[in-house]
Length: 328
Image (cartoon, rainbow, N blue to C red; front, side, top):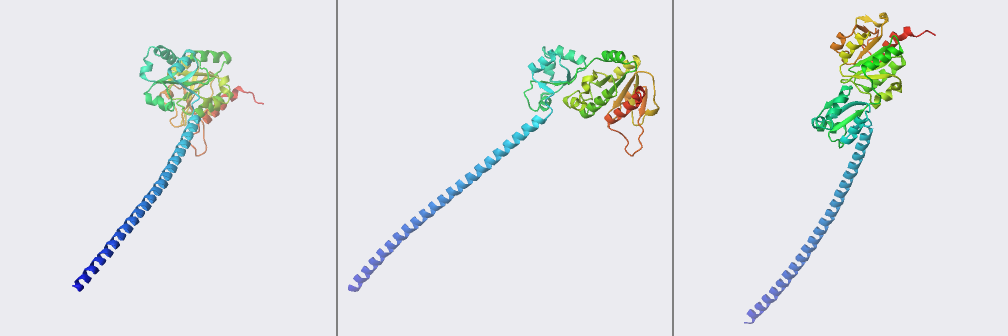
């Protein structure tokens, strides 16, 4: 009995020790796990804070970059050639009613057929202004996204005269006038340079077709360097019909061509002249060539086969007008 009691006491004491150790283990494990969980949460929060800061920095950088791009777009928008453009129904109507010189009008079909614009656009077109019926998106592209209401105009930097008035005024000032005609020259720098040379050599006027030609824009006026103030400009709807009218009025029409029939140094007539200059890439159109009395060329000795349109115009004007100047 004593041995049994001793064994039972030892068993109870061992069981208490096991319970206490298991309780301590659970407590320690719980505390460790909670501390680990707390540390994990803390690390997670710190990572979240760090990641949020990074995302905020990225957002700020993107915002700054967008602002820079916006500023860049604004600067490029301001650098565009917008000083010639006017858009919006009321603004355009005011320009048309005041009869300001205009190069071109872009409008939608709804605007063109409207009661307010139909008749006035018809009258403007009869004076040589090019009217293009285009979709809304095209006008948005021209005005760089402005609120255009379906119509925009390009202002001219010079008053234009009719062909009859140009013929009459040129004959009054000079018995042997020279008029320069442009066929398909769309580069405003070339147009401005030609106008400058034409005025310097005493031409009485410039004829520019309504289509396939640069208008008298701000760039043209700048390159012309004041010559527009001293020379008449005529915008015509049909170039070849105008050439026929000039021939009926006693003018000889000559066209500049790379493979012309006659050398310019050998050409000489005692009549008023119309000199037709074609574009650099295509030259004179076939129909224009047929309406010319002579096709003349500037002889070249080098390997370069052709000249810039404005340079060719200046050389031909010098050659054809030198007999009118007394040598000093």
